[in-house]
Length: 130
View 1 (cartoon, rainbow, N blue to C red):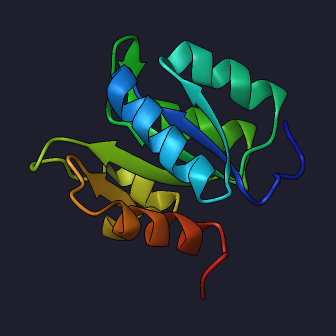
View 2 (tube, helix red, strand yellow):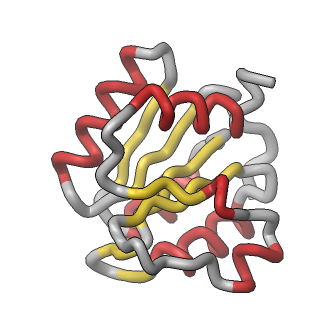
């Protein structure tokens, strides 16, 4: 288990390179430290090696389910804040994630026309904004 997170360290998990890369560039331009993973397996390796303050997790991954990844990520890093990222308008958080404290505010819908809204949500989760 990883003990303490770097406050600005963000992990983006998305199997779509354009989404992953554009979010990474935007957040780095805003001063955040960002790592990316294209799969559930890659994300779990990173989470096992280094601390993160926040993970942005795509619901549908090529090698697994983002909901399951969120559960496993929290087991590895209990302090980790999680935002679910989905293109599905019908997506609802499963009870297991609600039990972890996730709510509708922790669901980002794709496409996001205003990245500043995403930035405010991320910085609120990280405690940068009150």
